[in-house]
Image 1 (spheres, rainbow, N blue to C red):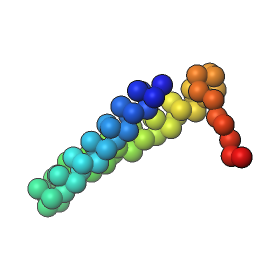
Image 2 (spheres, rainbow, N blue to C red):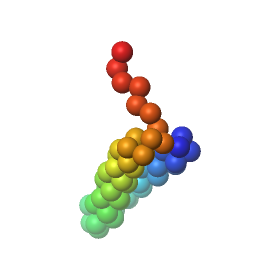
Image 3 (tube, rainbow, N blue to C red):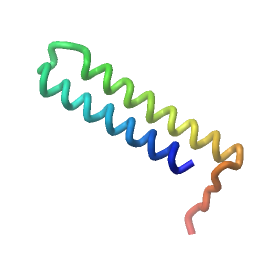
Image 4 (tube, rainbow, N blue to C red):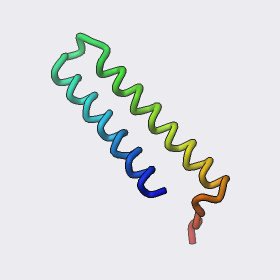
Length: 66
């Protein structure tokens, strides 16, 4: 489970880095920055939903706040 979450975080950071790269390179002339940020949001939502599903299935256990 840690590997899946770690890979998802790396993909999210990669998408964020590519958005920054396109923002600096294109200076807002294309939609590449918007597309990269849209991918980042999609990956973040997918990761959140996957974590909720994994908790529901019992693959991970929430410890709560003590």
